[in-house]
Each structure stands twice: as structure tokens, then as C-alpha cells.
Length: 219
Image (cartoon, rainbow, N blue to C red; front, side, top):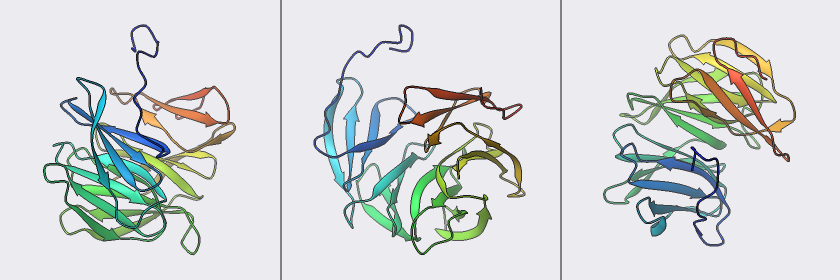
């Protein structure tokens, strides 16, 4: 409960090593990506798992993102590909792309950003994929091994955790506009709905770095 800052329930998803959560725009369902090769579908009205979608290829499933219309899930599938899940039918297709760790979708649903972080790939690359053609249209060098990433609510900036830094990329020019160090180890991030702050959990501790996005300075 965000108003009281208390945990109101725990939702078991099995022995699946859950990592990231994507919530449907209408708030009815949440989708939990499980590292060992599945996505748990949670009914938010009952806080129960109502379905499980298996991802072809098995483990190393890490990142997840949902399109603004709530129709499609993109799942980062280890070192092999991006899984594309039609939410209505649960049909799973794939986009070939090596070394996938994180995935993010633009607010208009037209662009998918995936980070490459794994052996035998460019460790500083974020691939830009056209959602319609499912083709890579550009590769952005973010200057360090990238993990999870998010797009700003207005779609103008891409934020990437890369090589221990918080990197801001202009989504039009694909140029880095800011890169600041973050204390400790870190993988994930989230952006406030108004786009003013980023929150980065620091791995191995109980602290969160708060980054004002107008200045991109961690506090």
C-alpha cells in the first residue's frame, strides 16, 4: 500500500525466481517475468496467479515490458532473442537478437529498446527495434554493459543502467545527453509517472538511489 508504505500481501508464483513486473495500463493484470522461463499472469483484483505463459528456450528470462495499449508483452530471453507475447491469445513469437537482458517500449508503442549484456556480444549496445517490422533500426553505444532500461513518459529520453552509471539517451538523435555514476551495484530502475525522478535499487543493500531527471544527479 503506497499510502501507508506497508506490504499488504505476498503472491506466490512458484519456484520460478521472479525478476520484473509489468502492469497492464488498465490495472487489471500484472505480468511477472520468471528467470527460469515463464511469465506469471496475476489478477490484480484477487492477487492470484490465473495463468502462466511458458517462454520457448527456457531459462535466462530477465526483462519485461508491456505496450501502452496493453496488447503485447516483450520479454528479454537471455542470450538469444526477444519473446513477443500476444496478451489476448498468449501466442508467443520471437525477434532474433543476441545477448538480451532488458527491454523497454516507447509510449507510442512503435519502438522497442533492448539491452545487450552477455558473452560474445557488444557489451555497450542498446538495440533499437521497429515494433511493426521487428527489425533493428539502430544500435546505441551506451559506454558500458547495459542492464535494465526505461523510456521517459514523454518518450523523449531513454534511461539505461550501464556499467555502474545512469545513462540518458535522446530518443531522436540516439546521442547520450547525460551519464552519472551510481553508488554500489545496480541493475534495475523505475521512473516516476511525472517523469521527474528515477529510482534505482542498489543491489545487496536496502537503499535506493533517487535521481532528479532535470539534473541527473544521484542523491
